[in-house]
Image 1: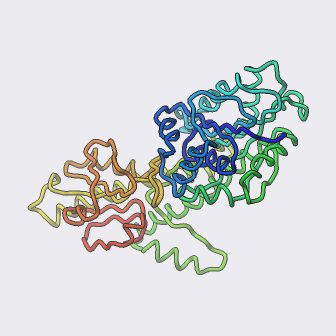
Image 2: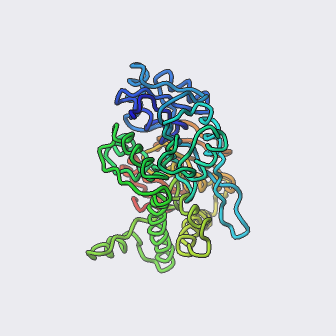
Length: 419
């Protein structure tokens, strides 16, 4: 059965590029989002997020009638769910509990418009077992249909998991070129999912089961988190031992079988800072290393803030005529990674917020990819303004613009090693 109409539930950083990619292949695409502003923006042929080349894709798709956005799901042949999977409050052990309410709400929203033969794919990164839960939630709403967890290959509705594996800033390219891991609840679910993604995916579509597909995405990002935690821990050790950690890592990486990552102010974004908790929450007694890595990376921003406090004390000792209120601090970068506008789970943003809250003097934020911020006592400024008036410089995100400048002041906290 061919897929003539495709519905994408959730038009954020993954959903909108995915919808645009299907539309660019002349498929009829109905994007669904509860954010009316986002829906209105897309229907004007514009985008509400920053992602290279996406604006052109969306504009062309809307103008040619292949893409529209709505707030309520409409009938389609395939439904792709790309909604957030945040956390609820932490357990007594300090382990966040995954919040699957957005996925459950998406299931309730599409259930009334399902028809026999439809395919439902969960793209949202999720704890192991969520795809099976999705099938159960759909079955609760549509007892007139059969689902793969009930009857296997002969199900009226097929359900699968296919996690996104793209890098912000390169989403448009990587959606096409990257391999896709596709895990159906049954073999038939997987086969139909491969057929759908072959609409635009040039990479290999690798078939597995739903649980393994869910775990694959979590494993990829947990592996990165552990590697970053090693680099971040190393940076704090080297600081105590008066060793340049970036020189040390460069030397160690000359070994043919060593590839240490670069340290930073923490770990952010909607994947690496989040996905390991999905494993830890399911198997807390077994995921000791993954849990420790999460704690190391979550504590790194506190270490950076302590370094700022030390810099303030050193400045006052060197300049006894000045007061704390006279000191201007500049935070370079607020996003969770370079050259994007995404602030989700950003350690840089949290560090800047804390500095602005604690420091009695002026705090500047130099963030060329964001037009406005709503943080008390944190003022957006240009690079030139900062270079003229800043006393303590805090490098948090290595945006391209920052690599072109040199800071000669004595009071610099450079968490990225670019100065």
